[in-house]
Amino acid sequence: MDNVVIKFVSLLFIAVAFSFILSYPLMELWNSCLVPAVTGLNEVSWTQMWGISILASLLIKSTN
Image: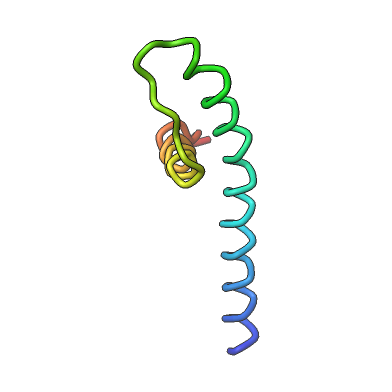
């Protein structure tokens, strides 16, 4: 039983870390390309982009 819990927690940690790593390039793209090009946009933080990427993946997820 303890082995299953340890595996679940470690996989959850890896998934969260991986999603943070993938959100960093999106944050850099947003802050360096879109903010200077469009008037009225604000820069986003890393955690804000992490939330945006999770929300987008939930909304655009394929059901196939």
